[in-house]
Amino acid sequence: MNDITWRLYEASKALVAYIDSEDVFDKVGSMGCGGVDHHQSEAFYNLIADARNAIKAFEESVKESG
Image (cartoon, rainbow, N blue to C red; front, side):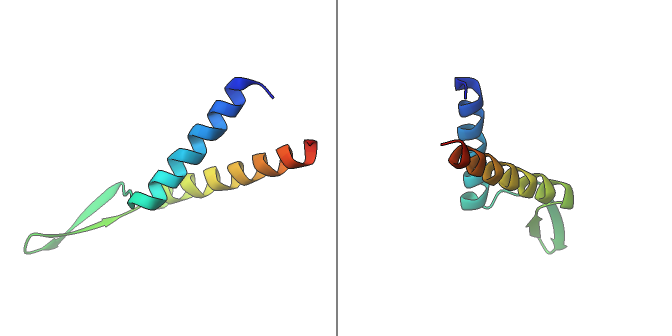
């Protein structure tokens, strides 16, 4: 495996961990009276889920290759 692939893996893993730990949202809705509702759009949620799955698949492939 080359350094670029490993750096991409590490950066992707760190980004997903940050999104999870800091409750990152891409949408805000008004609840009235000054209140807001922060949430993740379906597209954003699906991208994060796809990234998690790709990270897991990469980790499994690294384990299998020794």
